[in-house]
Amino acid sequence: MTAVLVLAAVAAACVQASSTLSVACWPRRSPAAAIVLWQAIGLGWGLAAVGTLIGLGTATHRSGLAGSALSQVAGFLDGRAHAPLGFLAAARLVCLAAGLVLLSLLVGVLLSVSTAVLRARQRQRVLLSLLAHGDPKVPGALVVDYPAAAAYCLPGLHSAIVISAGTLDLLDSDELAAVLAHERAHLRERHDLVLLPFIALLHGFGWSRAARQAHRAVALLVEMHADDRALRQRPARELATALLRVGAAGGGLAPSGALAAIEADLGGEVAARVTRLLRPAPSLSAPALALVGLAAVLAVIVPAAVLVIPF
Amino acid sequence: MDVLWEAPESLTVRQVSGQLTERDLAHTTVMTVLDRLSKKGFARRQRDGRAWRYRAAESREAYVTELMLSALDQTGDRQAALARFVRSVSGSEARALLNALEALGEGSKG
Image (tube, rainbow over the protein chains, first blue to last red):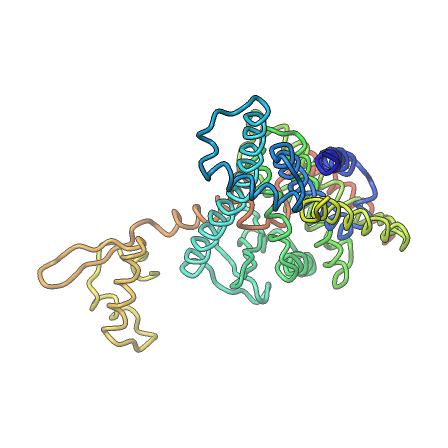
C-alpha cells in the first residue's frame, strides 16, 4: 500500500508543480533548465498516474509493482476471471484496467501524433521541392513566393528553413540573419522532439487546463531558448524588431471566437519574448540550477523506483 | 513542373522536353519524371492516341496556398510538424510595441 500512496503523492505533486511552474517567472531567466524540469515532471506524472491505478489493482507488491501487476494480469487471463469475483477483486480489476487504458492512451496518442507529424512534414517537403527556390539574401533557406510574412522551419533529418517572399521584403538583412539564427537553433537542437510529448498531451487531454497550460509554457520556453541561442550570433535588437515586424504582419487568418482570445494572449507572449531580449534578466545562479536539476531527477527516479523495486 | 504550370493546355512528353531547352534531358527521363508527378497527384494525364498528355492538377498558386496555410494555421498536428518563427499577434498591439521599440532605438542613438 505504501507504494501506491507514494505514487499517488508523486502524481499529485507533479500536477501541482506544473501549475506553479506555468505561472513562475524564473523559467524565463533559464529556459533550458526549465524545459528539462518540464520534461521530467511530464514523465514523472505519467509513471506515477499509471502506477497508482495499477498499484490499486494489484493484490501483492512482492515482485515490484510493475512485475506484480503483470503476474496479476496473467492470472486474470489464465481463467480465474471465470470464477465469481468478490467485490474487492472486481474493484481491483477495474483499477488495473483503468491503469492499462491510461498507459495505452498515453503511448497511443504519442504514436499517432508522431505519425501525423511525419506525414505533414513529408507533404511540406514534396511541395517545397516543387515550389521553393534559394535566395542570396537568406543563404541556406528556401524562399516561397507568397506575399504575406511567414518564416518557419521544417525539422527532421532533411530539415529546411522556409521564408516567404513577403518576409524578404519586410525585414532588412540583419533581421533576416537573426531569423535564420533562431530557426537554425530550433533545427540543431531538435526542439520539435522536446515539444512533441506536450503536443501529444494536448491531444490526449485537451480538456484539461493543466495540459493546455503545460503545452503553452513549454512552447514559449522553447522559443525563448532559441532566442537565447540566436543572441550568440546576432544583437538582441535585430531579433526583437524581426519578431515584432513578422508578428504584426503575419496575420492573414482572421481570428474568430475563442481564437481571438488566444491571439490576444499570444500578443502577450511576443511581448514577453521582446521584453526579455531588450531587458535581459540574469540567468539562474548555479545553486538554483542545481536545485532545479535535483527536482527533475527526483520527479522521474522516485516513481520509476517504486514501480520496479519490491517493497 | 514549371513547364506544366505555364502551359495553357495539356502537353505531351515530347512538348515538355522541347520546352526544357536549357537542360539536355533524355526523352525517357522526362517521361519518368512526368509519370512520377502524376502518380503523386501533381499532374493529371489522359490518353491522346498513342501518347499521354499531361497537365498540372492544380495551379501553382493553389500549392503555394496549401504550403503556407499549413505553416500559418497552427492548429492541430500542423503545429508539431513545423516551428514558426513567431505567431501572428493582434495588429494593433504589435504595432504599438514596434513603435515603442523604434522610439527606443532612436533615443539610444541620439
